[in-house]
Length: 271
Image 1 (cartoon, rainbow, N blue to C red):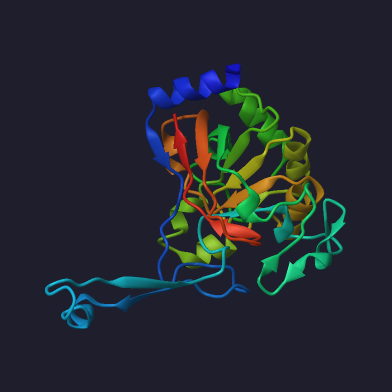
Image 2: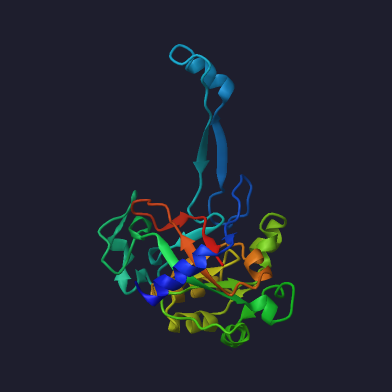
């Protein structure tokens, strides 16, 4: 067993479990260009009791119906989600697109069903605490210097294949103030994204939706399209930050949606 595997098992065995996911509900904040998240109770108990009365007297059930993009709330992006000049990792994505998803992808590109369960060492870069603030200023652009100094303050080093979690403080607005969450967030600058990519983490996660400031798509392109690094967005990192858990074991289980570019996800951290 590798030293990293032993470290992970030791952490899990004595750990508190941190839920890094946000709730989902009809009317929740989603990107303005995306379809809304919709959840309906499709079948009611008082209706199905009658339906099943002849075969199972007294039995009833209820069934929910979900209509959503895979980018509502806490979610996981693969590199095929974004492209630079129609390419991700130098592959023309248009060759693999079909109405029902991606097919025939080369080995270096994976649809979400091809992503295995992920168990990674988590590194929390609590930029808010490094700055001595309760929340980063509106539209603040996180710099490489911010990330480097945060890591030094926390005495952590980012290693290849880690899951890096960036705390801005804006997760608090997800359930309370959609306008602030969608439009006033702080995030990574392009230089900070390149700083992260140089350290070769497997996942970069952040507690806002757009990830980047002032050019969110450039941050996505740097991490996803240019470097093949998975992304998680709309995380809740408040408890992890409050408890100063700068290292953890992060477990991410994307849904196995064939040909999908992303997945709703509920990640957890053990620390």
